[in-house]
Length: 395
Image (cartoon, rainbow, N blue to C red; front, side, top):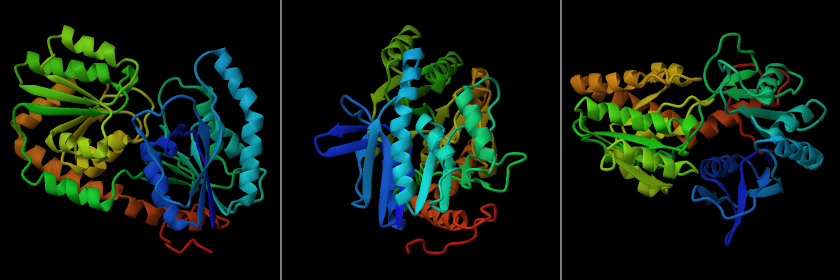
């Protein structure tokens, strides 16, 4: 069985071949277990690959590249229009050869692919994965709004997966957790933190791109307020981005040179000890997140998540009975939560244990079985039934 994936995941040429965004590559490597061949149609970018990139390990995965497009400003937007004929030809050609398809939204090439599904006769098994905020508040780009409106309908004849459970969710739209851990990694994380306790200095951890919409400036502000309240604390910032130097200067100006540690991008083996030391994972983002994988990874190591109350984050934290979601601009609420946990360490231990238990739902093994059931449903006339099937997919 041939599985087609259409996404905007950036790929780069390296000495060993093509590499792509690490978390997506890991996921696709595991999805390849269900198929004879996986074709990933995605853009190829110029320049050196970022440190977050990984090569595919599965020999069943083949990358079909197209030119990259998009960006800020009218010239970049016109570039999208010029690229669409190439995208349409590539998507249409691969759809005719596929037995199942996944379209990863929101993105420009994914919008086009989801529209083409309305006219394509095959494949029967269709899955559109919407990774963004399914119910955003406030203004957003017209393309994101249009994609969600299109996916709520059924002309594409696909099963749609989203983060969270939402009022009025159509029958073909399924709530779905996305993976980030192998079963071995989850077990190893539990072993690393068996004796973990909350104490001083409080260890805070942020993992992701270093940019303002993700909340990095607010992370530094939270640490500053803790220090002002004479609560000993330190913070590790893992990731990179064009604003990194500005954040380094900001931490220094605020007298936090010794409390803030910038690590850049780290491989999983180097990141694991930081997760293991962390008492809290911070993610005070205002951007349109679905469910940040870093929260799941932190939970596996007993780090209690403190995140912005956007998208599905409040729902899942309540369901998992761990952590808190606050308005991302209200830094005092984050600080008050940390102070409360310090005053109630048994509650922190309980929620830390709850998070570790919930992290098992984010393993690739769990994910692959749910995908098996989903694509069996997507091949039937009415994709809105419950996800209780686990029939083999290979024909």
